[in-house]
Figure 1 (cartoon, rainbow, N blue to C red):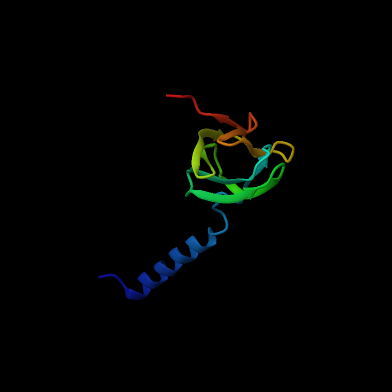
Figure 2 (figure 1 turned 30 degrees about the vertical axis):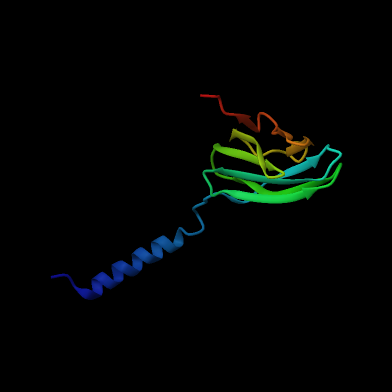
Length: 138
């Protein structure tokens, strides 16, 4: 038969041991990578950027007037490893881009991720390499 006091001491020691590790484990940086939505169009457009991957989907929408830039904050989480993520862009209600990338390093401020609205139904994704590179087509 096991002594109940001994079990209580062991249980408390286990809880204390786990508690002491609480600050030592990192599940990724809470800050993410911003995406600039840029209009090079002469018209007003509603842009929705959706990112997903080893994290739940993140969606942000904005209305861009001609020649306007809007920053969509924390769109791609920074994880503790290189990870694959997808960027989908909806422009004025229609999906116009759906690309997959591998994030290899955190971009510098001089290399922003950009969604560029070129005109009705037309966008380009400007994701700088080697920070992120497109995944091969299968």
